[in-house]
Image 1 (cartoon, rainbow, N blue to C red):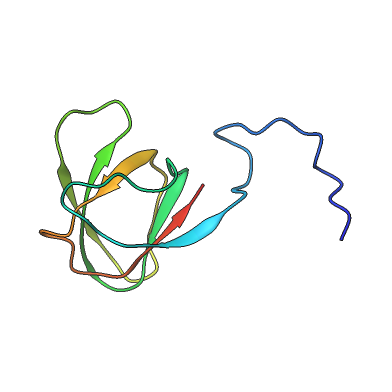
Image 2 (image 1 turned 120 degrees about the vertical axis):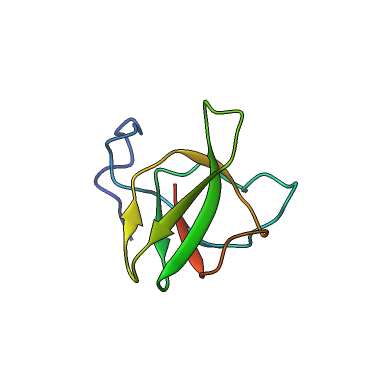
Length: 86
């Protein structure tokens, strides 16, 4: 299928080019730095943002989107299924 945007530069505000199920892990980085995360249910997502050196717990509602450039989603403390957009 032709992609009319294939020559367009990617940027933080451009639509995501990938989506993936996040496997929370206490040491591994995500496979891609995200543009956003979406919660599959109500609960908590523990993440680390790209320019941070600490993890932060975000309470989320079902379906809520966090527009954040995350490098990690931690297993300890994350209580929901997470979808990543990069």
